[in-house]
Image 1 (cartoon, rainbow, N blue to C red):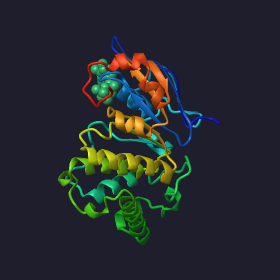
Image 2: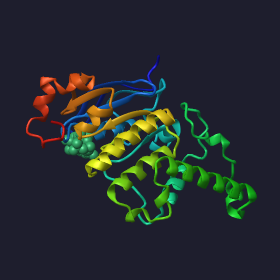
Image 3: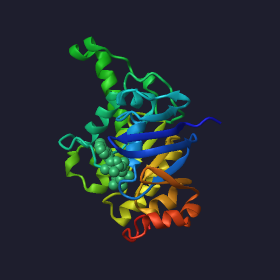
Amino acid sequence: MDSMLSLEKVTHYFGGLKAVSNFNLELPDGALYGLIGPNGAGKTTIFNLITGIYTPTEGSIKLMNESIIRKKPYQIVHMGIARTFQNLRIFGSLSVLDNIRISRHYTVGKSKHTGNRKHKESSDLVQTNLFDSFFRTRNYLKAERQITDEAIDLLKLIKLDDVMHEQAKSLPYGKLRKLEIARALATHPSVLLLDEPAAGMNPAEIGELMDLIHFIRDNFKITILLIEHHMKVVMGICEYIKVIDFGETIAEGKPVEVANNPRVIEAYLGKEEGKCS
Ligand SMILES: Nc1ncnc2c1ncn2[C@@H]1O[C@H](COP(=O)(O)OP(=O)(O)OP(=O)(O)O)[C@@H](O)[C@H]1O
Ligand SMILES: [Mg+2]
């Protein structure tokens, strides 16, 4: 079967610095893969290349066999790739619900079916135009109601509905990270890229996050690529792991294979206990 997402010989330079070197990835439909490596290894740069923030110096990136190179970030979201950021990007002064609604608005015109999801497809939404929004026609109000209902359903699934009317900035860190994930899901992705979702979480929140990631993959039928420093998370939930260091792939395989790989152990030597050790 073809991959959901494939990267072939992807290389990226920042000036003279080779941040990603000859990187290959075949992410099958429905997979939950991990991408790990020490600080500065090139992990976030790979996400930035996939999401159109950077154009690779060399190599190809395809979503369901279609090249996404040189597409704009919003086009890539429309095609079905969503992400969270290492440094949270939430609208702090807006409510939790409005953060989700905005994200859904972003993809209202999305026409392409890019995967199997239990979510309502965007084509189910009442279509509106500028006239509708200017005069707040019945169509407009109906579409807004649909978007709000869908956002509330999503918050219930993610178990954030109890705080939906709160200002996002008032949420504790663990819930903010969940809100970022919910916001990405609101765009109806086929592929979800999570950049260190457990960063700053306490052990109880990390346990909940692991359940949540599994739940998302199984419930929404989404393919997931996860960057994470917490080994408990990566080893606990990923089926397959790629390890990079200085932009180069140094190991890959099932969690147990990677954990026992001498090159991986060497790359992480001296790291904090419990983090990529
Ligand atoms: N916009 C940029 N301009 C120049 N260099 C950059 C830029 N972004 C990243 N780099 C460099 O590229 C390398 C890879 O950075 P990247 O952020 O991808 O690492 P990372 O694996 O995500 O690290 P971390 O675990 O600390 O988040 C680093 O040496 C970094 O300093
Ligand atoms: Mg990073």
